[in-house]
Amino acid sequence: MPQSPRSVPVTFPHPALPLADWADCYELLVPGQATTAISAARRALGDFPAWVRALMWLRNAVVSPFGLKGSGAGGKHEMIGFFPIISQSSEQAVLGFDDTHLDFRIVVDVRQAGELAQRVSVTTLVRRKILLGKIYIAVITPFHRLIVKTMLARLARPLASIS
Image 1: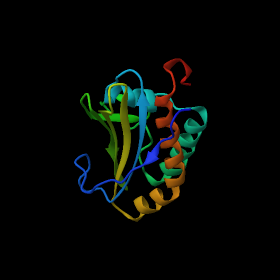
Image 2: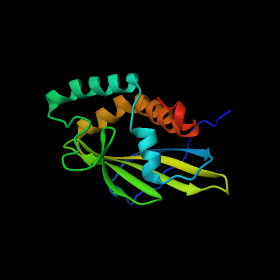
Image 3: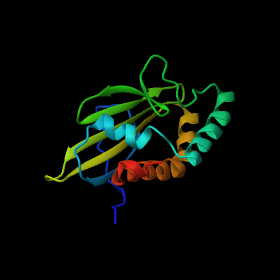
Image 4: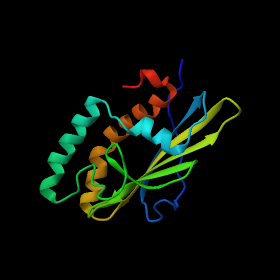
């Protein structure tokens, strides 16, 4: 039976977003073949299930009157799912963008956990700039946690069963 993602503490300041004032992190022990952070990010975040896409569509419809960027606001950056890639190495991929109400980063870290497994973590960092950013995070946090745990759990499944 595959493990479930577990919550782990985040240390501030975090190098990916030093001014972040909100964060969470989930990690999962992934058995089997070695992977890079960017590959793990693509597997976990590259193709959202229909229910997540529907939530993102609703989010974009609700925030657009406030002048906030929609998900997928990558501009000239390469994208994974809805998120622009900011930086990548074999051990870490950083995705995200800055907006008027908040800046956010999604950090996917991969580290070896013995010969036959890797520990993959997904850290979400947010710098809430204005009151709207604080309200936004308060409203979306329960959905965010469910989405992150669901997407991270996909890494424990065989490649052919991800959909």
